[in-house]
Length: 148
Image (cartoon, rainbow, N blue to C red; front, side):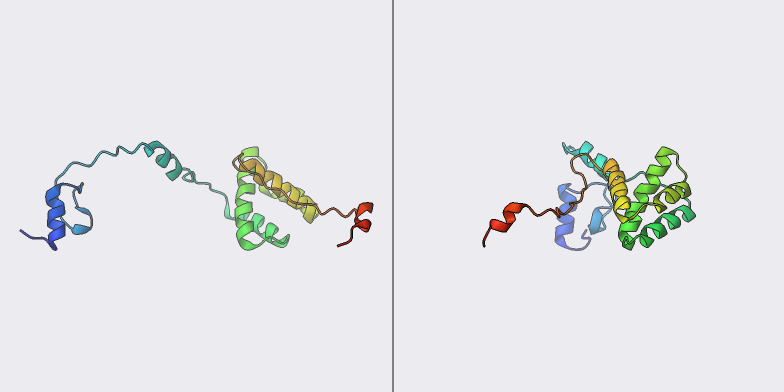
C-alpha cells in the first residue's frame, strides 16, 4: 500500500514519526508519543511561558497613559511599551493611574526622563540598567594648551 511518495511510506515503516496524524505525510499511525529526553526541557518550558502572564487594564487608563507620553515627545511604540510598564507598576503600588499622571504632569522633560528610567530599571532584569549621559559643559584649563 502506498500513500504518496516512497519516502513517506519508509518513514512510517521505520517508526521515526510519532502521534496519530503522521505529521506532514498525512499518514495515520498508531505509535505512542515519543518521550522528550531533552535536558533543557524545564528551561524551555520556563522561557516559553515567561511572557504568558496577561495584564488587563481599563481602556481609558491605557489611552490616557499613552496619550500623555506621546504629548511629552515619546514615539508611539515607546509610549506603548513604557505605558505598559507604568500601568503595571501603578497596579502593583495600588496607585490610581490618573493620580499618577497628574503627578507626572508637573515634571519637565528631564525629570520625566529620569523618573521613567527609574521605573523601567526597577522592572528590568538586574543584569543591565538604563541610564543617560549628561554632557560636561566645563572646559578644563588644560584644554587651551593642547595643540592638534
